[in-house]
Length: 149
Image (cartoon, rainbow, N blue to C red; front, top):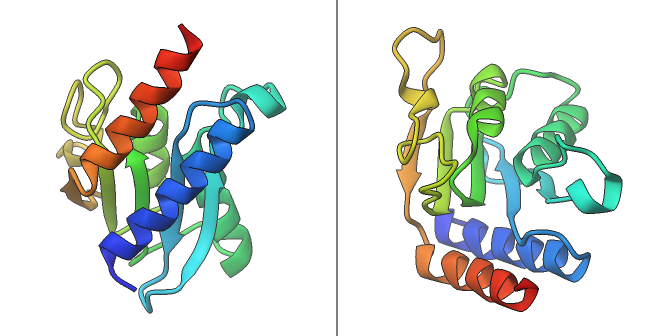
């Protein structure tokens, strides 16, 4: 599987979040060998947890699977640009790459509003691939919020 295949899987996870009544954001962690080791989608509403973002759920699952908090060489794939909390979690977990779909002009922390992951003051800076299947990610989010209004 490649980045595009992984993003399609993240979009499927985003639809699961939507079906559960949460904002449709999906994420997964891919090991250096290309295997998915963690998956997640937004569970803030379901769990009443402000940290229940897709990225945090996926990072926790990956760390549990490998029994290690360091996810060096792994790739975090997410349908929406991570917020400051999630970007910080990716840096703290030492992921090697972040791949995201839609840009988040209101809360994005991987280049849109802030650029946490490229801050030279931090001890780790993952590579970033942005805009992968952005149209599909954006359409899913727009449809969700249109229904909610």
